[in-house]
Image (cartoon, rainbow, N blue to C red; front, side, top):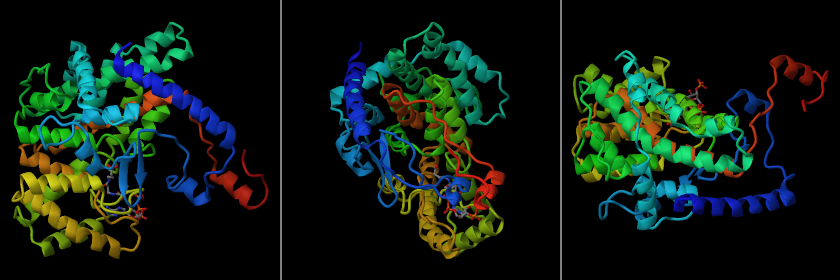
Length: 440
Ligand code: CMX
């Protein structure tokens, strides 16, 4: 068994004992009550999931195994002195629960390098799609084509013992994460770079190789990819992509099927697709106003027009967060360090000053502050990647780290099939009229 897998097994064994004890003593304690409003309105505020890899605080933002993003930037091993953390280190932290050393990170990188081969039929499946196909559709189809390489479904068909679920999930997870940069880069080069593909460089780190295969072999973009892949990886368990991966995985669908399902959710405009919507919206604003640096009053009017058109301001608001997203702040700091004069970044910073008070004045928005998607596109455009329909694919590659580390934990902790209760409005009315009991 490889060292990473051995360490994971040891952590999972002790967690299993601890959780068993915890449930024996406290399993019947209530952690909340559910209102009718919550059942109808997106289940906000209902605590009903366990996700070990990260925890979101509405005021403070995300913590990965207890560490904030600035702490990760300080403590995780880096490829460049004083640079951005290697996302392999964050994956190690989410999986094992301990900060990795440089050697631990190398363990992850080596394992991903060894597992990164993508068979030709995956490229053929993507090539079969019209060029006009959205990159996220190509990506999910690429992942589904890769499922032929998965071992979990094959082992299940042969009658695998449930004791072994965690082990094969772990192997599939590592293989899948290793292969995603190649699939993503293939889609990018096919759709936007005349089908001219770039071979992987086997000895590069996971994000370095992604930057290389995309065709952006410069230090700034590579460092941006390391930051990008780190901060988009996980956002606790209730968001659409994480929750869907977990839900589908609970049916013992393998990691390929579960992750593909989650990424179909990431492809929605209220979730991960918001990163493309932000840049599209800003490009349209620039074209409309015929300037690449709109004045504050012009931005305010454009925001008002967007709202009057019955549309959301993309990149603003959040279902849980109630302050500026620290993932936005980390990207703003990157921008201020590497491209302080960039006009698109300056526009993003101006929008940050103008949008929150306007949204606040509407009186209905719970969080007028920017989320992760408000900034990411501007940094990519700076390095020449202006093809915004591709952005959600980058988000998806990063998100694999969190949702698949979580899926390993789901199997290691033997989490059962997820199946909450639903009701009909008819049954709600009968219950309100006292004509039926509360549902069991
Ligand atoms: N622009 C305009 N209106 C907004 C808004 C925004 N950015 N954010 C919220 N609202 C509106 C809602 O649409 C809702 O309106 P109605 O009552 O008319 O339906 C009202 O304000 C209350 O919404 P809320 O409780 O504050 O927010 P939700 O939890 O329902 O929704 C989110 C959260 C993210 C879907 C929403 O803020 C939004 O649509 N934002 C823009 C899209 C976006 O940036 N998504 C990315 C989120 C991060 C990610 O997952 O990647």
